[in-house]
Picture 1 (tube, rainbow, N blue to C red):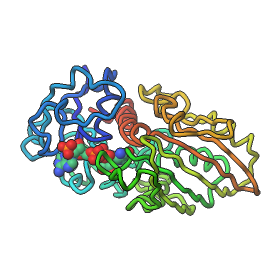
Picture 2: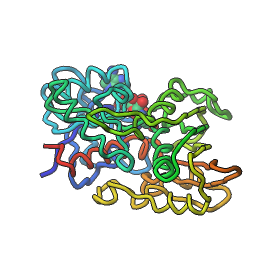
Picture 3: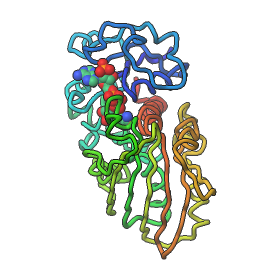
Length: 351
Ligand SMILES: NC(=O)c1ccc[n+]([C@@H]2O[C@H](COP(=O)([O-])OP(=O)(O)OC[C@H]3O[C@@H](n4cnc5c(N)ncnc54)[C@H](OP(=O)(O)O)[C@@H]3O)[C@@H](O)[C@H]2O)c1
């Protein structure tokens, strides 16, 4: 029997990816779709501004979208929730669901709370056990598990094997982020056409803090944050999907570029060992061409779940520079949440 799931923010950029990625899923069945009052009580096909290449699946098209109010939350028939709603409404809505059922959230609201796991299954699967403390502390039958900001995910996946092998002292990252990362009506066309914008509200703060929690260690039910410095500069560019990041890393111990390439290419972790349905075979793909990765050509690598690295250069001891690219609505959002839920399923947290 499959687990019935609901999607909050089902009409949005991330919500649409959830619908696409969950089609025919082995363990999860889409049961309910939620969005704002604007979309409520209308068939999904009439209210979603569908932006994906594939068609909306037949099973979904005619489902009536539900409003996100106390009645619809209380009456839900779902066993699990995937959330992609604006952060200002997430605090109340996600908590109301989590009283009874697990919530896997893309929203920033709960990410940095002490008892809430912020998970990338390839990086810190052991942090999932925090949900036991969370349930007890908040007296919930369910729980909230979060995935990081879309830019953080693409950065932290390569940082993990670098940290484990050589230690980290300092990371400096400049991002070139896609338009879908701002949501359907996020950036007006007249602001971005023929342009790049060197500011994304709140983004640098997330990229400078979330990695330290994810790469931290869980000791006695608490996460000790990793100790290295991160500096981020975030820009918006005229790309539809796929965040490109220019990264400079200063490690504790020295390495050769060949050694580093081999470590990154061979990196695999819990999702690959557990053979989770959404896990890419290779979490990191290293490209050798001078001009890759590029959003247009590399964002769908590993069905959008691999991080693609290129232009790896070492000009100084213990320093490496590279570009990394990840699909922001797949690896950076819906795919990330689904992989978290698959990990929880395999680890028996979805009873
Ligand atoms: N886009 C990304 O790459 C990305 C990556 C990681 C995390 N996130 C996070 O994921 C969340 C969703 O982002 P998005 O890009 O999908 O945004 P979006 O395209 O603007 O979609 C927002 C969704 O939330 C619904 N919504 C808005 N106000 C609501 C309300 N008051 N009550 C109930 N539903 C409401 C919208 O429904 P209507 O259509 O009815 O208005 C829509 O389904 C945000 O918290 C964002 O920060 C996004």
